Length: 110
Image 1 (cartoon, one colour):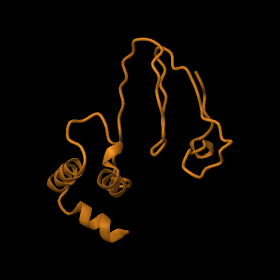
Image 2 (cartoon, rainbow, N blue to C red):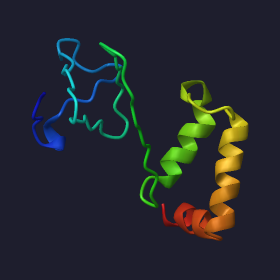
Image 3 (cartoon, one colour):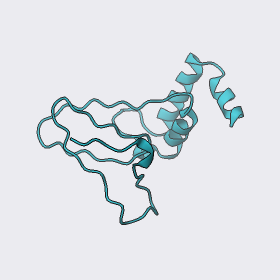
Image 4 (cartoon, one colour):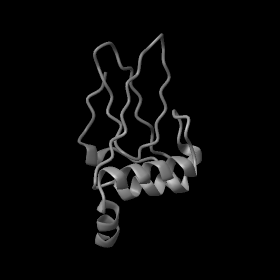
């Protein structure tokens, strides 16, 4: 198990980032969890039979970024049968149904 430093000091691995930055590695044992900040590339290797519960959180604060990601990088979406542009459209339609006018307000606030 690890006890990471505050979120702001963790390195973000991106193209063009310092090639000498080493990834964070850990072994998560029974009853423990790992928090992966939004936008962090990561990989999980199961050392034994495991159950994983994941959640991607979308709020008003990151809603436009999530929609942009779904529209522009559909090849990076996995784990659902509806992918690509149709997933972005369905997500946007559902937001408009549940929160009428919210996308328009957020778009004009930028």
